[in-house]
Amino acid sequence: MALKQISVFLENKPGTLSEMTGALAAANIDMRALSLAETKDFGIARLIADDVYKASNALKDAGFVNSLTSVVGAMIPDEPGGLDKLLKIFHEANINLEYMYAFLGGDSVDHAYMIFRVGKEMEKEADAVLAAHGIRVLTQEDVNQI
Image (tube, rainbow, N blue to C red):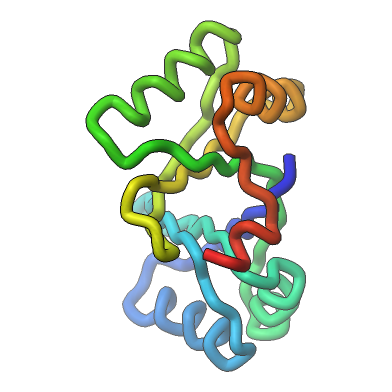
């Protein structure tokens, strides 16, 4: 797993998300991707940042509980069926996905980026399977250039 994702636990009340993004802005952190899931009492923001360790520390200093998680990042064709092709590769390799989210960026308009969380025992295999099928697996350096 070449990418680290920050998961931030947020109280489900007005302004909490803005406080989180404010802490990142004050630390000059650029978020590359963001996903937000919620329950009645709390939410989990999952994000990819240009400087994951600086971002994690800024959030901690601002009072936000957060953790780092290994994820797989992949570049996929931005075309009908692009994601389906990638998901079939995971299916054929018997790799289960816990969650995923997408983001766009950079100069190219012919691809999108996907973030995947796979089971811990499948992390290295997921990278290898994608690379074996000619799918570019993202590194933190790639994310910084998007």
